[in-house]
Amino acid sequence: MSRPRFNSLIESLPALVPFVGPEAQERGRGQPFRARLGANESLFGPSPKALAAMRAAADGNWMYADPESHELRAALAEFHGVGLDNVVIGEGIDGLLGLAVKLAVELGSPVVTSDGTYPTFNFHVAGGGGRLVRVPYRDDKQDLGALVEATRSEEARILYVCNPDNPMGSFWGAAELNDLIAQLPDGVLLCLDEAYCDTARQADLLPVDVGNAQVLRFRTFSKAYGLAGARIGYCLGEAKVIRAFEKIRNHYGINRVGQIGALAALEDQEFLAEAVARIARARELIGAIARDNGLQPLSSAANFVTIDCGGDGDFAKRVLDALIAQDVFVRMPGVAPLNRCIRVSCGRDEDLAVLADTLPLALAAAR
Image 1 (cartoon, rainbow, N blue to C red):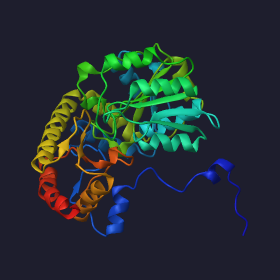
Image 2 (image 1 turned 90 degrees about the vertical axis):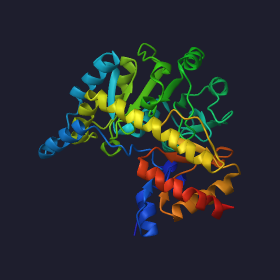
Image 3 (image 1 turned 45 degrees about the horizontal axis):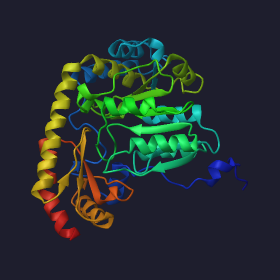
Image 4 (image 1 turned 135 degrees about the horizontal axis):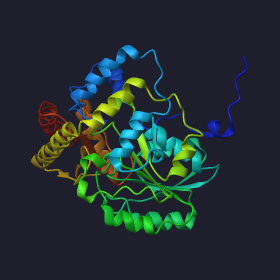
């Protein structure tokens, strides 16, 4: 039987996904996890107002979503003090990053990122035929100076920075990021992935400035807002750059119920503040659990804590496997020396109680 002909780029790519989801792991194990602490979802859930709006919208699911996402874009524009034409909605940050790569990257175009940061971005670059230039972390943080240097020397099309960073949880404040932006070479597009910005110290966040056409800000309702399953993200940028997204985005890619839920979630900032406070408390609890077991938690501005297991990547992998064997889903960075760590998402007291019970057993098994 004849096979279809794929393009040469697709034929050259390895058969992989950025990570194996907890559902796939549960199918492989034949049983569910007791504590789901590996996907950086908000176990505290979304706003009750968002849930009510989504339930009420379910009967109208025979309709497509507004392809312009007008009401949500207008609300986000008002929230951030920008114009309607400075906002584009997408299928989570992942979908928008894929579009940004499509906008800027041609076959062989250099793209600069940190070696070990959010792997799905690399997935998009590979799929678009770009050439990844990976810059090592410095002291468990993205090395902004080295990233700019690599961007300049490689004449990169895109510089990707995740802040707060996944998987390490580290955070660069406005002063450092303004310095980075001031040093950007002409022509490069800075993709600033701010998925976890809602859980960082708000006074230290880089203010939104849509006047610089070289900077795109990517944000999401998947993390602190608790709507990961709705797949609603957005990008803020200069109007002409945002307009370019309209040429290539999937205009019916946003689900209607999710769009309505995101709007209600945005309007409930009181609930968001409560969720962020619970996340901050959970970070403290995870840190205490780590220290009680002789491990070192890293400082985090995200909705997870990365824990230094005190050994190498093989040891951390044994700890991870032992936790999974005890029905606790966590993850670990994939690149040395970051892979000496495991990463634990913030959860409810009952979730973290399971972690507290199982981590000593996992460490004993790993040793």
